[in-house]
Length: 343
Image (cartoon, rainbow, N blue to C red; front, side, top):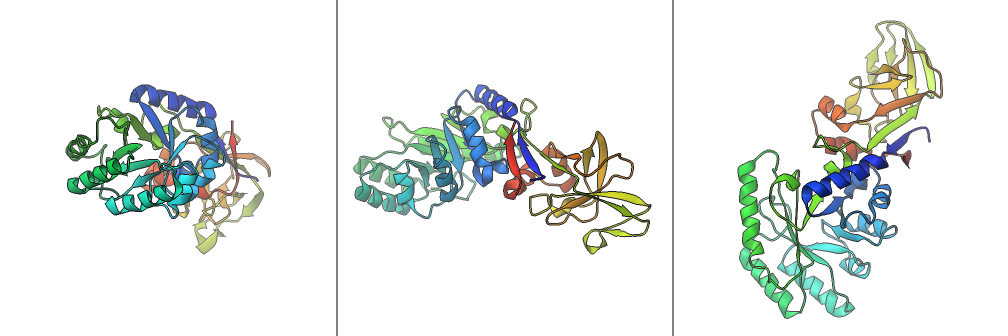
């Protein structure tokens, strides 16, 4: 393939070690959405044995990862087939008392202890148990069946933007935790933004964007993208470039075509708004990004077909242009159709 995602292993491992030190506890690395576009298989292989858990959002992601690792995997969304998760030793979340009853029925059928993490809804209002009476019933039912939770957790929704709301979420979580039997070896874990820096002691911290190099100055971006020039076109002043006449040449130009498009995650909203590096020079995007390619102005650059193009080194740059977050920029590349190379 002409286009490649390059994964900097040194940066990834450095980020991991730095976050471990800051956390003072264990890490669950989130590798959902194809590891935020980085490639879940590649990331898991690099971090296998270096972190305690890997987190995914669905059963399909978990089962794919089970093919390459024996590490603990937690599914943080609903599953289609909990039987399969139990058989494959995959942890999953419990969403309610009724949900737990379904899992207990499976346990009695399979005679395999399920690895369960109870989600506490402290204010995110996405998943989990919100009512303490329901929580107490869950505890009693587990005790009755000689079962216990592998983990109990919540998700802080507004760590970086609303301190008071986060404080209320922490207080809410503590009220639930006080009801957990002291003899259980249940892991308390938290996630959402910079939870490591809240000063809230947990057994494990879930990390996503930071492990990939964003959000703090002590971490470094892991992902970069490169491609190459596959065609050169001479464009006369007044001619149009790309779909919908997305750019009109104000002068005679030379335009290079790069085989990467919105089908690979390079969002069309970047059209005419970003630049790439070719032979040490900056080339500006011209015309609307196509599904499979985009074009740049190389009028003042000495280049030829086959020359390397550095497209992307830092998601923050694209995020600023688009008025969005690094999360969205990176996860767009989940559908990248080129190779992912660890270097």
